[in-house]
Amino acid sequence: MSRKKKEIILEGVRIESVAAEGNAIARVDGTVLFVPFAVPGDIVDVRVTKKKKNYMEGVILRMVSPSPDRLEPFCSHFGVCGGCKWQPLPYQMQLEAKQQQVYDQLVRIGHLDIPEIQPIIPSEKTVYYRNKLEFTFSRRRWIETSEDPENIPPEDRCGLGFHVGRFFDKVLDIRHCWLQRDPSNAIRLFIKAYALRNGLEFFDIREHTGFLRNMFIRTAENGDVMLIMCFACEDRPAIEALLDSVSAEFPQIVSLYYVINGKANDSISDLECILYKGQEAIYEEMDGLRFKIGPKSFYQTNAGQAYRLYCTAREFAGLSGNEVVYDLYTGTGTIAQFVSGMASKVIGIEYVPEAIEDAKANAEANGITNCEFYAGDMKDMLTAGFIAEHGKPDVIILDPPRAGIHPDVAKVILDTAPSKIVYVSCNPASQARDLAILCQKYRITAVCPVDMFPHTHHVENVAALELA
Image 1: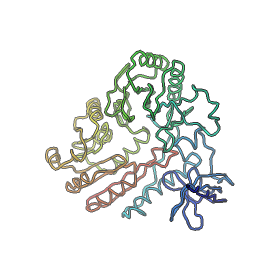
Image 2 (image 1 turned 90 degrees about the vertical axis):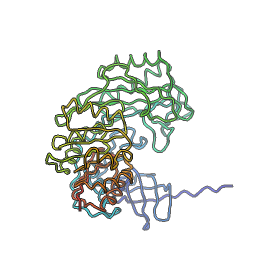
Image 3 (image 1 turned 45 degrees about the vertical axis):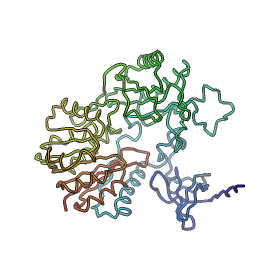
Image 4 (image 1 turned 180 degrees about the vertical axis):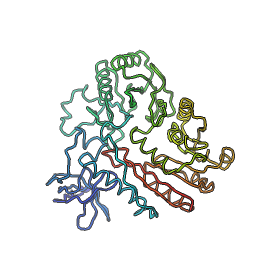
């Protein structure tokens, strides 16, 4: 017979500061307590959800006295949806917390020797700043605490929105999302209403049954929209009827794709995206350059901040016009082309073949002749032989995924010893690990965080290195 653990309630806890991963910190009898959705200065009663020797985790049970800095969340889904956890936190406090996060990862935890960190570059837009969102269909949506599960009609049990927290099979039905501008919300709501009206089956994530699986909406700064609909199986009449209806309702959709995905996961990177109607891509412009964005292309999701991020990277590279530059993890070649006017030659390497095809098309369309692009796994591509064939880099710019760079890649960079490295990262923790390896031969000369994702704890960081 199992014993139920006694619930621990901590009363009158004062929140002291902001922590990593969207949490806030308090101290209770010398023990650190992590609490999500809290603001420094809040006094709260907390229910402990995890108790370890050196720390505790908990959730707010009751707000005793809100902080004078606390803001009213603007989104009706706050606290249930997994995103935008920092809505109650004033934007200036968010920026300060992100600046501190970079310092903590690089200096306090990483023990790196760095110059004074430059002030974080804020985002001009704090809402409707994303140009890409993915929404998931679910036959059994997340039931909110204000609802009575026994009295929800079948048609209201379906949802189209975001996964909830750590639950892979729980989807919160989204009424309005503040991350992507119109017509994103209208398109999502129209498709949900059409599906219910026409009896289209929403996907059952646990059973892997159903028809409507997920959808991607991309929006360009000029107002053009790309919609990618993902279906679990082929039903040509149903697919065509839905796509024709949404296309007729939203003339902003200039690129309309669909995908048939019968796999166990939602990734479409290995699947064919079928162009149903319109043009094959949408386009973004930056610094006089035009970039083609296809259904599988990587492009920074905050376009305005991407410009500031790339300006920082270009400034840190300190190019004179004579350098050979390697742009590792180049995506659609945005950084490569952004710096090409100040370099002799730029070599871009990226894992996704479709992104490399876009990069080549972008360079040709922009009249850039000194960029070369290659597709392949970075640790397999970046070898001594590749460098001997294409030229030793004077500068390496790298913008890897959150996991950072492979040890083999770090070794090749160290062996190649370019005079400068510019490391762009969306994860200061993995960046700090990689910088510690590179600092065997290099010294860090500049660090500048960039806020790409307001109301979240995520932060981009740019670091410059020179040979010691």
